[in-house]
Image 1 (cartoon, rainbow, N blue to C red):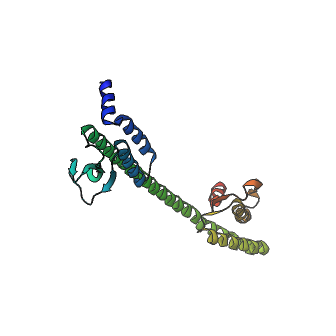
Image 2: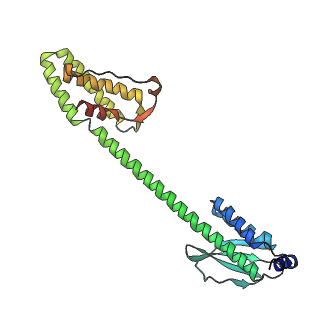
Image 3: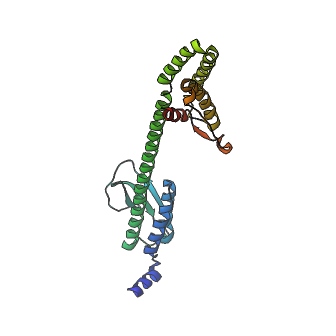
Length: 252
């Protein structure tokens, strides 16, 4: 059998179809662009068989899956997604002997590789789009959670602060005035940053200082706060208003 193959190769210049098919399969796995995949298949058909021309063409409608010889051309159907929607169209040319069954089997194998690679590429793109949609949904959920977290600063903190200010107006008017100014500063910061996704650690800590000054007025001697911030993290970005709810929970 080995001698017969060598004789056939010598007499009919038959390519090593198995090696050519393996080489094309390996190359197609590295390609992502449909046009590049088509060019690789066309070259794999044209070069070994010394064809006059080879083209992968898309069809407007689905066809039957039969190889057809017509007008000096051979048309090999290509199945993509279970439907024959493309053709591998080859032209042997006048200098090329007619295509025998082994040649046609090789061309059908190339057509199958093309269809399989496009199927795989479609699945890869679907998976990438699905991951992109999931990532977007996760981002939207996270942003919604952050917005809800930021909104928690409003009601109870405001009522408690106003009650403290009302009490201080009678007992300690200067402190009441200072607390009113700090409360205004807190809500100016909230209004300015609630729609901003990110801020710096430095800005967030300065906001916390103002917030905690108000809480110290409420809790008196029961609350003592120290803030220790490493200088190298001061300029890092974090979600806006993300620390205040943590501090508020700690106070509770």
